[in-house]
Length: 320
Image (cartoon, rainbow, N blue to C red; front, side, top):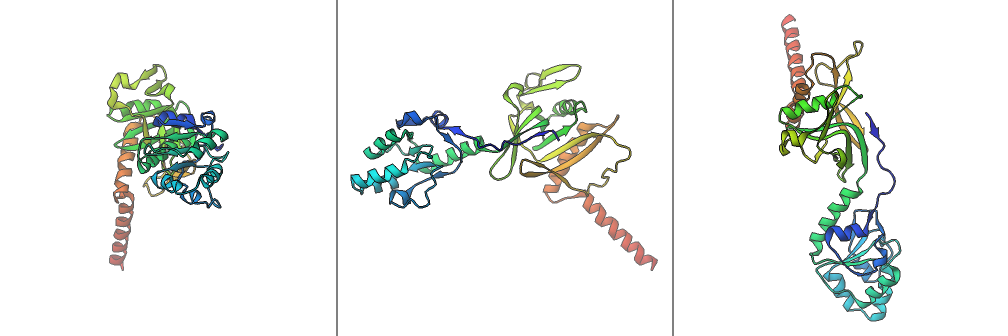
């Protein structure tokens, strides 16, 4: 299907990008801003502040809120120094203080010594954790690039694939003229979210552009308006266009439900044979509507098969 292998190497987000995105204040350890964040989970080290480090997830961003900092105030300077030294691990990307609270002197000293970024935000702990988690999930998600076209049809993300020159872009143009929205043409960048959903978008360089053989590159947003495009869309169905093969048996009822795997997620696959006279845009449009009906519990092919079985059974009873 033209899938470029999903990124399997560990992805990283630099701490400096986190600082820029959330406008965080740097309290100490500025030399460590190039450290990489490799997981999207955050951690509040309550047990560690109390002295229990047996299962400390050092690879996560450490969040210190009012509860942790208030407890640190009850400790002696020596105890704080000992625990802050353990907390400032070389594998920890950064420590983040929320609600604009002051950092203990021992933590400031140890962060500078370990070159571990100590950051501060004015936002509340729960709200900030949620926002950072969403940001990291988006940037650390497994990715793949597919040669194809992604179109939003009636709210359904339809990924159109097929060999070069089979008519993917021309079909997308016809769908846009019929009121649907283009997401990406030629190269579709796909991210697999934590819940397994696949979200497709276009590389920035070719965003909103369509390549039509004989015509060249056109800007869909300029020609058809902002309502004809969107930046990203969840992929629900893959439409595979292939040249009609006379000897091949194609599904005529719609009972065979095929799937294709993208990264680690199985997506429904519909194979559409291409030959002169077939209106591919209308077929794909109907495929989107049929997918919506199936999600609502109505399957035309299944109902037809059941009715046919009942009719045959009645005729057999009459014959007997």
